[in-house]
Amino acid sequence: MTRLTGRALRVTILIGENDVWHHKALYTEIVHRAHRSGLAGASVFRGIEGFGASSLIHTTRLLSLSEDLPVAVVIVDDEQRIRAFLPQLDELVTEGLVILDDCEVIRYVGRSEERAE
Image (tube, rainbow, N blue to C red; front, top):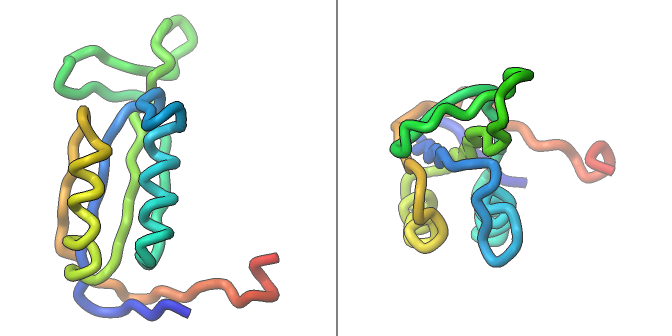
């Protein structure tokens, strides 16, 4: 079981829902690479509205034609592991925003093998 408490680094990757990597959703590729790299965990959050460098607003509002909603992939682990993972993000994220924040992990408890099934 992974243990993580105290000082940590959070990387947040802001991309579009329709961004792809080799015919697969980019956020899926990021999560799977984070998993293979042994990082503590990764979560994907779908935004309801936003805009980026293109200044085009993407929204879930009923009358909008936009479906490329913003997505945030959030990964937290110790600084050394996150920094070792950054070259993979350089390869994957050709359009988007990658943010690093210092943070403090108060509690991180994984599910036991029996509960996860």
